[in-house]
Structure formats: C-alpha cells, structure tokens
Length: 116
Image (tube, rainbow, N blue to C red):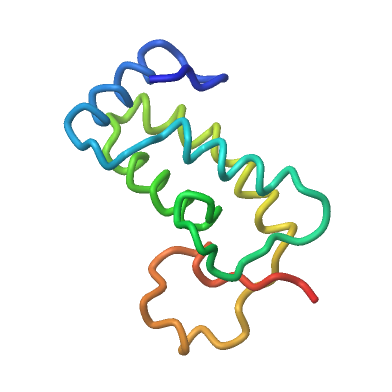
C-alpha cells in the first residue's frame, strides 16, 4: 500500500489490514482522486464521470466507507486528514436545491451542486 502523507504508521497499518480484508478499497488512489479534483481552480465537475475511479464524489464515498471501518484512533486521524479537503469541497459547491429528487443521497457531499 502506498504511504499516505500525514498519517501515522498505526493508521497506515489499520488501512492496510482493512484493504487486505476487503479488496474493494484502494484508499491511497481514491484519496489522490479526491485531492486532485479539489486542487483544480474553479468549480468542481459534479456530473458523473464516465470512469467511476475518476469521479471525486465516488472517491469520497469510498473514503467514508474506509473511515467508518477504522478503529477509533485511526478513524480520528483519517477524519482530520479529510476535514480540510471536505471544507474545500464545500467552498467549491452549493447545496443541491431539490434534495427530495435525490432520495438515495445519504451523505452531505451527495447533495452538492456546482456553483454556476
């Protein structure tokens, strides 16, 4: 597993164990997808990407799944890593004006809309 800058060895090991147990997780790759989309100037393209691995909101969904399965110490550390990225996402978007049209949305980032 590639190292994720800003995380302790303990948290890396917890993520590695999780990825070994559930091979669907690719935490470092999904974090890079999320970070690179937020680094772009201007708004965030929130339309579905033709490739799920390149979609920043799909990446955020997976990062949340990882976060929820980590032990408490690692969860707190990983949440601190995500917090500034989430703040950046909020600054690039506005709340979706018709949340009732997205009954499937269970997370705040699924109810965002790119600013015009």
